[in-house]
Image 1 (spheres, rainbow, N blue to C red):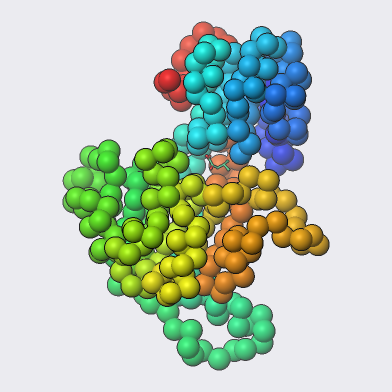
Image 2 (image 1 turned 45 degrees about the horizontal axis):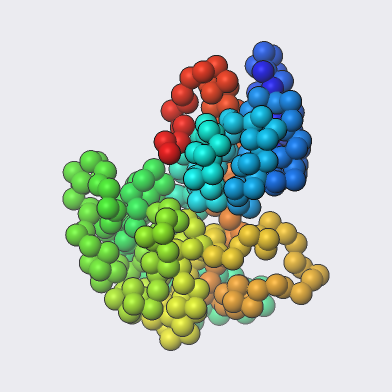
Length: 331
Ligand code: COI
């Protein structure tokens, strides 16, 4: 059995090699190149591929893989929004994602960002960097006195709820699919409008499906409390960047943290330090003292990376053995 892995970074390589040693019945080869309709040719002669990337898995790519005889693909990430599912179905693919590599990785990141914004540490850090050691006017708010609205109570949202409850925050939640534990705790509000109306801070944990496109927009921001704090560690497409910038300009939104951006592909995970920055709206956000941005690294912990590689290779192997991995996509 032969698996070919695309886009393997240096931090993934030892995990992949260790997995190969522990599964001597499987040959695992890899490249650091991303999967495209061109690089699909590298998978010729293999039985399955293993991928992670933010570039689209387009129809052309799916077709090119199929032409190489590849119909099994395990994804090392959670999100499937960049995959052309229609094409995958048409070309008879078996596909899995890695939905639970470490919910804590993203949930901790969101909690840290939320707490930093309420305590205004980005602004204080900037002052200290400038040797300005005065306190005022950079006074913070205590997490235990905040109502935090969690949109999306999947694995990540639920871990975040526990962390925030540890701070003593009052947590409320909205999801169109109710989780029984969260239901039992009585955290759900009836509507997004209620969540917007009641929350001092809002954290987004829903996928980028068409129903959620630009859910944070002029109209939803208008329904929020004045000086609300918003955290988006899910998908850039959830936030209308123009509306967000307007909200920050007017002070309606007092601070914003994000790990994603609607036009991040081709910009994140690259060094722009000595080059012209390519996106003026993103620069506008980065330059603000009350905005915290990380370049899609909320997931990026040793635990998560190791689980992404191991669990996705296990899923490849299950498919190859004629089994359905638990993370097989139903489409
Ligand atoms: C996902 O798992 O879907 C993520 O967004 C993290 C990814 C960048 C590995």
